Length: 273
Length: 248
Image 1: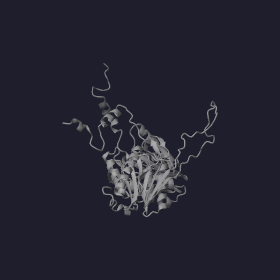
Image 2 (image 1 turned 90 degrees about the horizontal axis):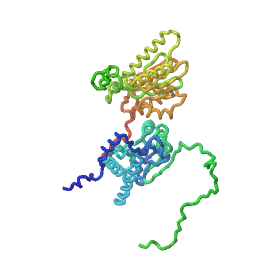
Image 3 (image 1 turned 90 degrees about the vertical axis):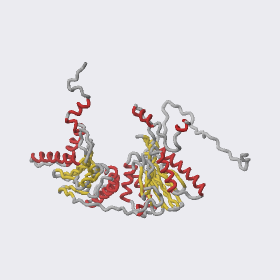
Image 4 (image 1 turned 45 degrees about the vertical axis):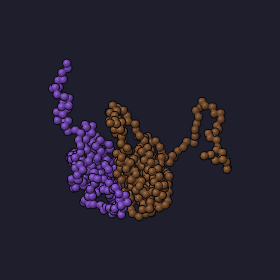
């Protein structure tokens, strides 16, 4: 009997072997490593001609702001984008993975990707990891069947909605949506409403802050409005600039470029095979 | 051998359990009310609360008045354990009664009542026997409007608009955007209804039966219970998963 075969975990999914050890360590007083969370406000909205996604830009590591201007709207396909809340590494990795899978799929089928394809790939991956991949996503896109907006929860369940919010600021943003959403919004009204919802999250939730990113997806066209609103500018910058301590004697200030420019040979020999 | 003279052989735990006073500490709430929201407006204070009393996840009581008058100048709104709210009303009744027995022409205003409540709540919390409520105290005395809140651990403050429970997360963002000093009565009611509607959509323990109470220098009125109009017929809610099988 091959004993070795029994020890290998089944393909895919999570190996729970170390969980008991981890629990024991935590009980003995080990501080579990904290992870970079995007305490976040992300929203999505379906309007007349497509989908608008919005996100704030603050990434937190516990009580500290780790990144003041991170990008939470991830590219999945030319016509599909995804906002991510939860653990930053998880949202980044899972959206990149599905994006690569869809690129290969597009080459295989020769067709534009559909939102439900991304949805199914994401939800089955998250479900197989039983919620340990802490990614809460708002997936939106326009394919030939029309505009679609979905929310995906870390355990793998999905909702199909006309307007959705996720993240720690989701209640503040949902308060704006529930009071102001109506059917048949135009593009500008939609962008305005999304910006308002994200701003509500930025100013009322401590886990969200900095700027508003917006992505407008319509049939055959996308507009990625990075830092569409910057309601938290740095208002004071000291005029003195950088001051050396009194003991230093500044001899010379010169900026040296680190890399020499690359010489391009026109019509030269190409690499031999 | 040190003999413990205060207790017989049994374990330390039973000493704690045997004294009756300790049996009444650290509670869990049973029948609870959900959020209350309140704003200052031009002439006074407006408070809104629904009439639901939930027993855990069951909506057990649908006729609970969670806003009550206190003395001549104030209104109190409460969320949390209903029995503790009823106890607080008895304390306040005694307070007002004792004050009027002085018969000196003075009456306790909202600021004084709020301070009294803060002391009561904080002292109970220090004894590990809290009154499981979040209270809103609003009123007008001699033209001065006052709106404050206290919760079960004794955190208290006053502001132009306050909310308890879920209202903090759902109603306060709206109030921060849309409140201004010169709201008329109609505008104030519309603003509170807007917030109550969002709470109705998104708070599972909310019921569609609410009262709005008003207090001004002239006195108070608590409206008859009524319900809000809701919009459920978005086209996108019909057959949402036509394209995406397995979604909700």
